[in-house]
Amino acid sequence: MTQENQITGHDENQIIAERRSKLAELRRTGYAFPNTFRRNQLAFGLYQQFGELSKEKLEELPDVVVKVAGRMVLKRVMGKASFATIQDMSGRIQLYISDSDTGEATHSAFKHYDLGDFVGAEGTLFKTKTGELSIRVRQLQLLTKSIRPLPEKFHGLTDQEQKYRQRYLDLITNEDTRKVFVTRSKIIQAIREFLVARDYLEVETPMMHPIPGGASARPFSTHHNALDMELYLRIAPELYLKRLVIGGMEKVFEINRNFRNEGISTRHNPEFTMLEFYEAYQDFTYLMDFTEAMFAETARKVLGATQISYQGQTIDLSKPFKRLTITQAIQTFHPQYSDAQLQDREFLTRTLQAMDIHYNSQDGVGGLQLSLFDETTEHLLFEPTFIVDYPAEVSPLARRNDHNADITDRFELYIAGREIANGFSELNDPEDQAERFMQQVKAKDAGDAEAMHYDADYIRALEHGLPPTAGEGIGIDRLVMLFTDSPSIRDVILFPQLRGKASED
Image (cartoon, rainbow, N blue to C red; front, side, top):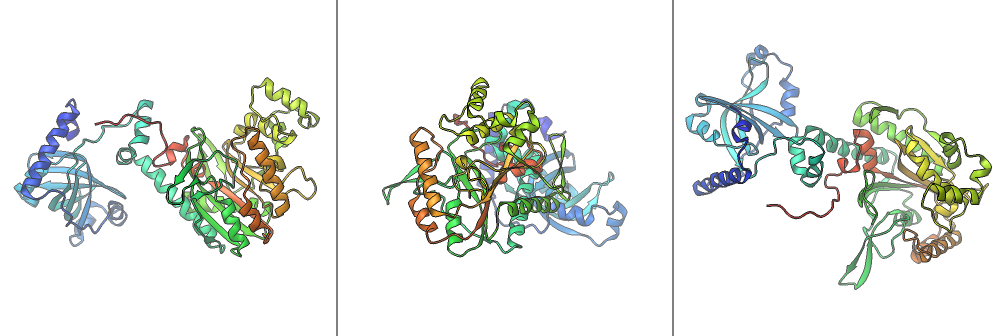
């Protein structure tokens, strides 16, 4: 009989009480929480090396003695012999415990172990009659007593929040969840290798800023007691990274946290991971080509292919990405709008009002076009698409276009209906930047809580000279969603932000 069947129907508090009693006995005998066992193999490595051998071929080899350790997730007791499955960081492997191999006392003690306990085992490899790679245990040790029982299963929407709140249980019981976060780590490593191979220098910039800058967003604020000053958790590292380019560090990148005091959704978490990188003597068109190459190489390294499946549809990262202006994108999906209408402020205002779309009353044509795009078109951009020629009024840090001062040399990349990246040729004219900051201050005074502050120190730095530079930010969490076919940002953040909940026993 499996242990799962034995505990079905028991009251959880009774199970916890029984396990505490077992732990108390271990303490009495002096064997609680030992730290003397050292493993020399992981489950996956054993399967790699011996998993393909037949039962007979494995028996022909000299005894393969191994030491493994992990959490017990399955247990089957059958008189004088028992089976258990342990799970380590790489996977699972089966243990065979018997009176003849370990002695009756050790086997008897094992029968009182519980699912969730950590055990260490030393023995020889063999294959069962059904061909499962297993370890014939000679020595067995209880390493950590688990007091709370593992959940039987996570199922249905009612348990989704529990997965997020108790991610440790989700990781124990759900192999797919573990794979998501292994993939996340590999994506970040592949991106880092891509940049370092191209002579980029990884740097770290402050997480607490005296002035929030580098993006249009509402910040979190805090107070530093010793300095007696208000500080803000950073909304973007951009202005500090560009200070480094001014200082002569011509290729820099940072992968780290940003914090924005905004709503929570399937695409938004107040704490999120961004890659930002800057390269002197390049422009935004170079960045678009660079981004295509980065995504394709990352997919090949991490997934083994450049075609990925997301929510039932295929995305090919090896093909050149589409490039459309805001108005071209709107007209692609909404051909009823003419060029003249999309350049008519009064028409745009009436249209937004009729559709109950929020916009800022002081916005010009470009800002109104963007509001219409955000609400009607963004979610339809499934194939990788660069949206270019962003209005200057909504791009306070981007360089104006040489042929049209009302737009900037800027793009945003959309994949699967979500913004993935934002890049532009950097504004390196200190007088223009100062004027743009002033416009942002006016917008903030008019009620735009996400408008930027005036950063006098950054203007001072710009006055020393920023070379022609291109810079980009990529949302790591959204990229991981794409690569792991995850519908919600909470699925790819180990500990997403959730509403407060009363503590449980």
